[in-house]
Each structure stands twice: as C-alpha cells, then as structure tokens.
Image (tube, rainbow, N blue to C red; front, side):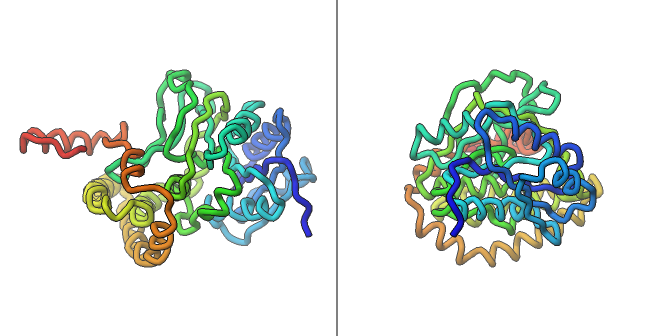
Length: 343
C-alpha cells in the first residue's frame, strides 16, 4: 500500500521542453512550500528527460510512448496524486517559471475555503511586461477567454475573487473535487480542457478562485508552437465539445447558435491564412465527439449540484474582448435591425 504524502503534487506535462523544462523545475524545487514533483513526458525526442534525470534524480517521471496532449500529459500525474493520498494537485506548464511563493499562496486559499475546488494564479508573460491570464471565463457565445490577456497593467486585477475556471497553465485543484467530477477530458487533447474541467466543477457545486498574490511567468504559445496547425484544429474541435458537454439544456440553443456563427467565422479566417484543412478536420472531429459524449453529458447534467440559473449568472454575457470580427458583425447587425442580440 502506498504511503500518503502531505505535500501538494505538481504535475508537469513535457514535450521537448529542453532548457525551459529545467528552468520550470528549478523554480519549483525552491518553492517556499515544497511540492512533490511529477514530470509526464509525451514521447519527447529531445534530451530534456535525460538532462532531468541527471540533474534531478529524485523527481518522479512517467513516460509515454506517444504524445497524449496536455490533458493526457497531466492526468497520469493527477492519478498518481490520488494514489499518494495528496490533498492538492497542480498542473504546471513546462515553459513556465513560478514565483517563490506561488504554491504556498494557492494552498492557503484552498485551506481557508473548503468550497473552493480550484485556485489559479496571476499568469504574467515571460518578459514580465503583460498579463497572460487572471482566470478563465465562459461567455454566452460559447467562447472562453482568459481575463486580462495582453494587458499591460499587471496590478489591474489584484483582488482575490471568484472566477469561472482555473487556467491549466499553473493552477491548484482539490483532489476531493477531482475525484468527484473527474480529471481532464483527454478527447480535448489540448486547449480548453481546463475550462471543461472548470465547468464540471461549477456544475458539481465547487467554486473557483483567483489568487493575485500567487504568480507565474509564462512563455506564451511556446508549447503549442511546436506542432503546426494545432491551435486551429483544436479550437474548431474543442469549442463545440465544451458547449455540448456542459451547457445546461435550457441554454443549449441560446449559446449554440452564437457559437455556430463564431465557428463559421473561424473557419473563414483559417482559410484565408492557409489553414483550411486543420480547421475542417477539427470541425469534423467535433461532430464525431459530440455524438460520442452524449452519455457523458447525461451523467454530468444528472449529477450536477447547482441550478441552471446559477450557471447562467456565472457566464459573461458578451463577446470575449479580442473577438473583434464578431464584435463588428454584431454592431452591423444591430445597426441593420435596430435591436441588439447580446443578452
């Protein structure tokens, strides 16, 4: 029988992380609250794991024979945290650097708030100049977005507050909550799997918190940039999947028609950028997965602990700040019809 541990578990999914992985590890081993670190390698072809084993032989490594994406790269670490009897588990990007008190501040939040199932930190760009995320939000257009992305005022959101979902870049989850609602959905592979988990936690009656005193620095897009067309394909695949699994029945159509319009525009934009095939393949995969997920949706909705109105009030009733093309389309529609469509 495995002996339980008192340390929070930090899980790093790695794909050819190189020196960035070692830098991420260095920022974790010097934390003011010591974590138990697990690296899950997604069949890297560089020497990052060889270097890791030499420099940090005490770190637990789980090796995959193929790339299982971000979700598949974190879940084995989460499962290991459950086996170890850990109270908390945190995913951490292989291209992020943690402030010395990053983990301590997140643990303090969850310790003090037993109804909070996840806590996220302030994610700042690697150059320390802009925000990357202060928590994820979900809109009534079916479009998630990270609050504060690309904003230069690093102190703008410096109040601990409730959010919709914790960002997967560097957040802390209560293991009890994960055991209730499940881990990351590996059909997402990468992108929005954190919002999906956050949505399920909300449906399960768990709160999410943003802790501004907890900070990490992140190289934006470094991981996704290693695979051509990944962002386009995953966006087209995962946005409909996120909607189909989690949005309460009462609001499926209200959110769904807006999301369909957004997907059409995304497809057109991808085509102009020479990425029609990744986008088209993503849309086809979404159709298949929506059908596959019908039983799972039934379980999620059957076991939820909150009312439809609670979820509706948690949504942002507007477009994401960076949805400029959709905002222009909506403005023209209002001008043409003399009425608004956003609620």
